[in-house]
Image (cartoon, rainbow, N blue to C red; front, side):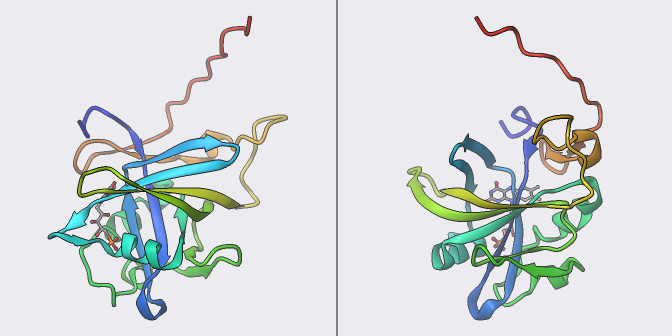
Length: 186
Ligand SMILES: Cc1cc2nc3c(=O)[nH]c(=O)nc-3n(C[C@H](O)[C@H](O)[C@H](O)COP(=O)(O)O)c2cc1C
């Protein structure tokens, strides 16, 4: 299934852990769910029958940031998928500079071209080991140099080079971009 549904967006989540140690981890069970309000969903599994650090932190703080993964951040994103304990600062592990949100109780990746600042609204029981977290995007940080498509609030995809996950260790970079107008509304 994971090699067929793709490329999947990657929610690269940053959270505060115990003692304010910062945590970063990628999740490709991640999706945009609604635009008004802006909602996202992320499904976080278990590691050796224990909850992963990200879900522990999200439950404790009720917030996270989604750092948008662009081509330049592919290697550090992958580095933060390492199974390390909650005492390890994963910004330092991946050689990333940390910034701190003033809207939600979470840090974010200073080098990310775009960041979604999220407040948790609900945790859904999937009757599976994964926890599905639904959160509202209450802030969007954008690099001021990103261009918008004329007359819209859409960031030009050519400028972003977004990374998607395929099966296993395969990724794709959005660069072969087509524009196809929607059929007329009747
Ligand atoms: C690109 C990518 C996508 C991933 N997607 C998920 C996912 O959707 N759910 C999940 O539980 N783990 C996923 N993982 C594995 C987690 O990133 C990994 O278990 C990580 O160590 C969790 O970190 P944490 O304990 O700090 O939360 C993914 C790994 C990579 C490299």
